[in-house]
Each structure stands twice: as C-alpha cells, then as structure tokens.
Length: 126
Image (cartoon, rainbow, N blue to C red; front, side):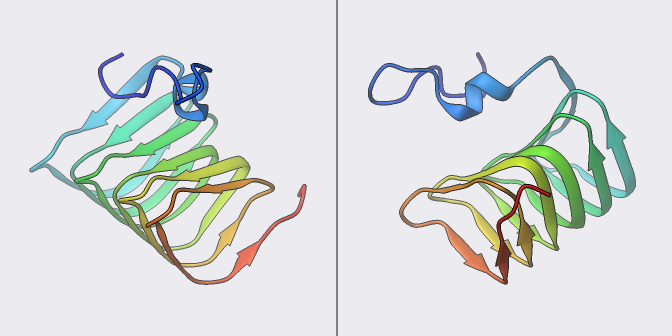
C-alpha cells in the first residue's frame, strides 16, 4: 500500500489500513482546492482544501495536508492539520503529527502521543 501502514507493532492490521477501501480521489502536496467535496470511497488529501467535506467512507489527511472545513465521514485519519469541526460516525485516528482545531464528535478516538486536539470532544454512539 502506497500510503498506509500495513501493520501495527504487534503485527495486526492497523486501523488505518483496515479502513482504506478503493482510493477514489487524491489532492496532492502543492495543490489547492476550494468548495464542497462529497465522496463514497476513500479520499486522501496531502494539499490544501477549504470548504466542506462529506464522506460515506474514509478521509485521510496526509502529513502535508491542510483542511479548513467542516468534515462528516465514517472514518477520519489525520496526520496533517484540520481546522474545523469533525463528525465521524465510526472513528477518528490522529497520528502524532496530526492537529485538529475544532470540535470533534465520534464514538471512538485514537490519538498517538504528540497529536494535538484543540476543541471539545463529544463521544457517543450517535
């Protein structure tokens, strides 16, 4: 896999690799996009996006990714920066380089040591 972790330290598939379906869109480093993004599979953002994001599957924010948007998705995996509120119906995974400046609502939050969350956290099934 070009952009995910194949396994965790204990040899089990990581939450990142287990959730990545078919990659349907990619905003590369150095690219910028503004507007409404809606998708059904997995999207990875390594560039800059501002606007609104709605997903039926997984949003991956790469280390160089900067998102200025409210996000609604099943799974959100963050290694870059998100400025805006996030609603994730399944889980949010924040890697050590990840930063969120906004409120978060999800039933499951996984944060590596070093990840930054500035906002309110609400955890519930719905």
